[in-house]
Amino acid sequence: MKQTVFTGAAVAIVTPFNESGVDFEKFGELIDYQIENGTDAIVVCGTTGESATMPDEEHISVIKYCVQRVAGRVPVIAGAGTNDTPHCIRLSKAAEECGADALLLVTPYYNKTTQKGLVKHFTMVANSVNLPIILYSVPSRTGVNIAPQTVKKLSEVENIVGIKEASGNISQVAKIAELCGDDFTIYSGNDDQIVPIMSLGGKGVISVLSNVVPAQTHDIAAKYLAGDTRGALSLQLEYLELIDALFCEVNPIPVKTALNMMGQNVGSLRMPLCEMTEENEKKLRNVLKKYKLI
Image: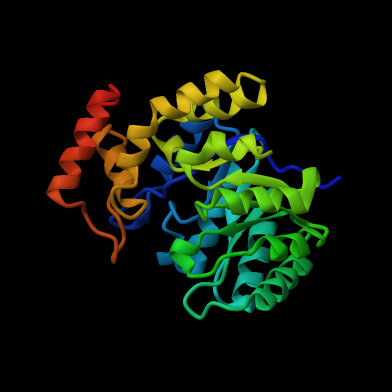
């Protein structure tokens, strides 16, 4: 049996910034807050963490700090995917040296590749490390979808153990589940599809929502895993309006804005990401008030 890195809700944690770079003191507070509120794993340096604008030295320092701060309380999954295979291998090896428990590897973006290229790319990276690897399929960002048949081929690589599925295509998720079976873990990459994907055999979610309501996000997955499907569905629907508000602009713009509204002081976004439009900021504020978060 392949290793399951985690079950439940992992937070795709934001990276707080200040004038000098990463605000590590605040980052430590965010990590502790997540764990204290039931988050089952921390995904560091992912899309929500703004890894795309992190130089390698900073990227690695954030992973290292996260591992040290978590101190084994939950798994730490390090984002290390790039569109350059040798670069991806270097980051993956560095994350392993930092003590990360697993890797999250996004599909190559911009230069893209074929399905054959995806198999070669991910296999080369997997063969360079000993850590379990979770694939990350998010074609709306990268322009590349991992087809179910490709996922099946990659699942045959020993340390490729799962996929974060953010295609939004439930039929595709069902096909992956059919082809790969129970020995390969599927996680929802979309907060509005936690229950639907878990109903197809998914083991949880890698969540943006968890930055704002970690306990409730944990409970959606935990209730489903415990057999309380009605309770999980009720929570999924209860938080749908908040989820929609957190994606009214490109992630992580709304979630970082929300955290700042909530007094978390996570700092600014890195260009080219910028502040929200006044209309969307007002909408987000009103939704946060409705959920009694501000």
